[in-house]
Length: 294
Image 1 (spheres, rainbow, N blue to C red):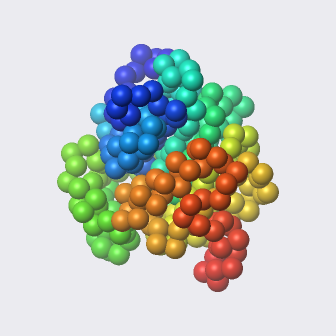
Image 2 (image 1 turned 90 degrees about the vertical axis):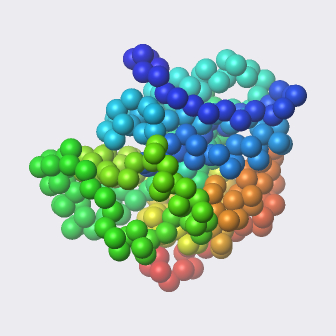
């Protein structure tokens, strides 16, 4: 990177052919580059190459456990997209972000100097920022980050038991046992995450590139109210396509219905003007009719 940091990555490439599209993939919070391990091979069979890298503070990247500034991670993304563009000058260049990775993508593409990519894909992007948090959460996290920022905490047992990121139990078990996953989180990292999600909420409507945002009805991490709030704040965006999955959870690219998501992404990359093959309805109109979001 620009400061000499080395960010490890995985790549899944089509066999015997040049890719017609390349996806630069951004993982979620406390996850790492292998979060696209199911999507990458699936897309590769259809001529799409995927580059997934560890963001700073996660996986094998420098500063493990520490949350990097948004300005730095956005510069990383600009640098990597430029490197991919140089390697694949004839391909469609796409940035796809899952959860926090979606927040990072929004922050970068909603800024004054966005990465030089052609499309953006947001998989249940993190938009649970300060404006969607309760006053208790805001005050508690502010105090914890300042008084004991480096202290690491694990999720309470009720959260582990009752809040599920996916209906794919085997993937959840695999993540929990993966030594590259982070299970104990610093308070200042949580603060940084919420700050990033607020930035994403504010910048979603500023993205100029064609964008696909996908969201699951069973998402217990980024719940319906903050997602509705972010989309309403973004306003009418002719370049924004959205899809709402009745069977979807938070980790859409590892759910049991993940191949439906993969196919929708592929189809949209081929022709963003056509309806998604899954028939998934638009997210905001669906949420606006849901009494739980009022």
